[in-house]
Amino acid sequence: MKDLSDFRISYDKLSLIEQHLPKEPIKLFQIWFEELCKSNSVLEPNAMTLSTVSNENKPRNRVVLLKKFSEKGFVFYTNYKSKKGIDINNNPNVSISFFWPSFERQVIIEGICSKITNKESDKYFYSRPIDSQIGAIISNQSSEIPNRDYIENKFDSFKSDKTEILRPLNWGGYIINPINVEFWQGRKNRLHDRILYYKNDNSWLFKRLSP
Ligand SMILES: Cc1cc2nc3c(=O)[nH]c(=O)nc-3n(C[C@H](O)[C@H](O)[C@H](O)COP(=O)(O)O)c2cc1C
Image (cartoon, rainbow, N blue to C red; front, side, top):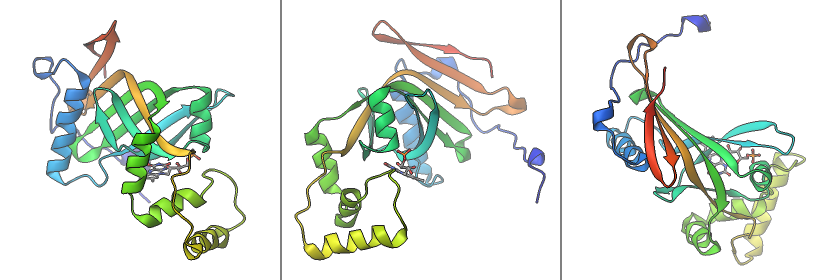
């Protein structure tokens, strides 16, 4: 196997310059996201790493899918009783990050997480394929199960019972209200561009960070 210390790429495709920056980070996020979608070069551009912290101050990351973003925040869906749900209930401070290698770009967002309304969760839940709805209903996400058959049998018996499909109240969306948003653009010689948007009262300011 190749020595990991020999993996090295020079980043020189794009740049991030103050004169071209919008006032609000969500606008830049939208520009970057549209570029990703147009290029078709990124599989699941909405996959993001979500970090939460437990009540023992232990951090944990996992990938989830961003399903919506606006000036109000960044929305994802999950099981509220999962490990992440328990962490968020205890400490709503979370961080999400995206890495889009073909654009040599990273975005890191820190913010406060809260549940979206039941109505919004319903809307998304019932828009999913039926089998995904059943998957969400029958999985007590993050709890221990005895084996693979256990969960497949649970899925099959739910389907054959033809029970009415209702969104479980412990499955729904969270919105992350951003406090800090960092845009990272890979540059030559490891002199990357880093622009950090931060909140000052209720408006956004930005500063450049050393790479
Ligand atoms: C590409 C990808 C997308 C995923 N999207 C979600 C998602 O949107 N919601 C979710 O709950 N889990 C999603 N998962 C599974 C999570 O990574 C994780 O296994 C699960 O949420 C349980 O995490 P927890 O035990 O830390 O709460 C995704 C995994 C991958 C690899």
